[in-house]
Length: 275
Image (tube, rainbow, N blue to C red):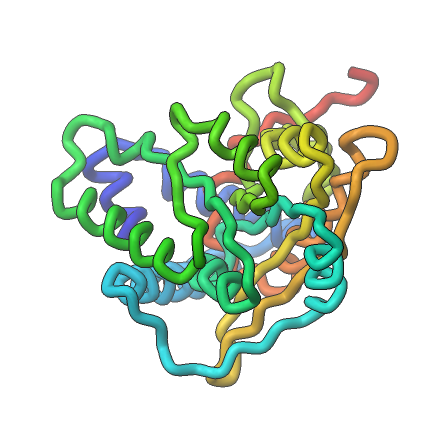
């Protein structure tokens, strides 16, 4: 799966350690004590099962297929009402559960989001052509369910996202990403620390007067459930948007086995007191 090719092809030898460190961060926050080694190992196994399901769904999307399952939407009425009022939305999700498949269900609700991806890894030397074809097919297949929306790499295309949002469309961003540029930091209380998130979602929403709506998708009891968090609009400053990240944190705490972005957590800079 993706983790093995990141280790073998891209040379990311620290990935297994970051996964376990991320698991430790989450379990310490949930349990309020250091987890035992067997707890970390058990959760890691559950996370790999989630990754396997996500990869299977990616293969389905690559064939422009989705399983014939019931889909339920939680807390969606306010989101639809807001959209009917003529306002636009920046959807915020995470590397969690079945949220990539969940993006396709936004099309079923009538949304046409421009989905932000990245081709950073795929352009690296040594990446097999088969892997490039797999992700290309996945993104093209996902785009086929998004009405007039599509998946678009952020590299070289940021203006298109702003224009799409300003022109009446919606944008979707995987928001659980750390900031690697000090000029692009949004400090968010996340797992007991102020962590430096990329402020791409909040910056874009602020620039175009859009709301941020967080969501995740999970497959439970033979059905997909798309869970929306509370819609947040800008009032005074970008911290007004932090409730979206709080929703994502709550979902991860509730079911950490669904969070396959564990390796990202150790990469976040942490704000020191009085800084």
